Image 1 (cartoon, helix red, strand yellow):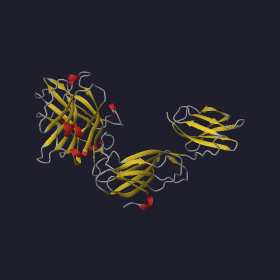
Image 2: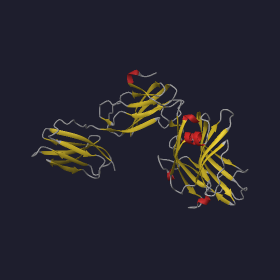
Image 3: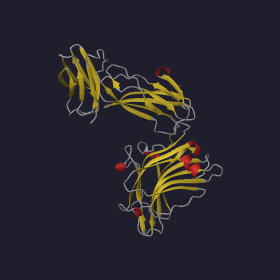
Image 4: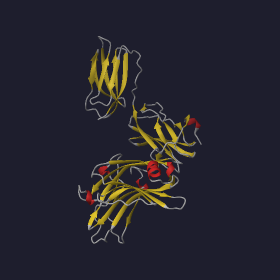
Length: 424
């Protein structure tokens, strides 16, 4: 049920569903336990030395973390002939998707060889998509992979479809982006009604003619896009980034139901954190028809002390097929200073070049008058002041920390204030 007194209503009926990322935690960046791991060994014996790492920051390409599968270490001596290990990260899809409901596959990948710079010391890594043919239950294995230079790819057959590539250069990130309908319906002539139920990343290590072949394969930024039945999320935060003492602030966001099915019951949650902990919390029970969005306003927050603040707005629903759109955050800046409107545009001007170091301003005041330029931090404390005449440019100390500042120009009875953001 919608909390009618706490939102601005703006329904939008869209022309088509937006594809979303159906892989939960595609970047291994948050709830990494959603990725399961296992090894397949093709010979009897417990010789697996594969190292799995869901949070491997050594070579992350985007975000903060990167998942890796490392099979470079030979697991044991006197292994059986043609011994191999396939290390895997995988996810079963909670709601299997027909091929016609899928859009594209994207990921970043990188490899390190067992012997530095020697491509022949590696075997293969890549990604697999397991489809089920509903007519007879046959499993169709679709493979995108990168393999050793002399490895002969297995040919396609009714239950195995292959998109081979040569092994990438060591230590270089590459991207994969494929249109699944073009690849699988167009090129491979698969039925649009087969269902994807498992997505898998793998690294293969192999004992080949007495030589142990393996590699460390990194994966990051994984996106399997398609159309969800159940998915709500935060499209954007609409409320501003300034807080003033004793002035109410209303968190506001655009919330969307990305799914085909109605979202009959979910929560929109807003939290504001400062340096000491949670300063504000509000939760709104909500509902949305399929493929619609609305602007939701939550309860007011009135700050009572200067501090850096972070606003987070998120949605919580079960089931929810995609988590990448569930939450957005933004910093809020506390200030006792506000920008005034220009009431005498020809008599006084003030411009601030944000992001520069040192912080530079240009100004003009009436000829023959003397004025002052004053710099305040976000809490309203004065951190700099200088006397100026007529027009010109000035800069404040280069030792200022990053943050939000306000510059005030005063001359006679004229005053003008501008906000500046300093980044180092």
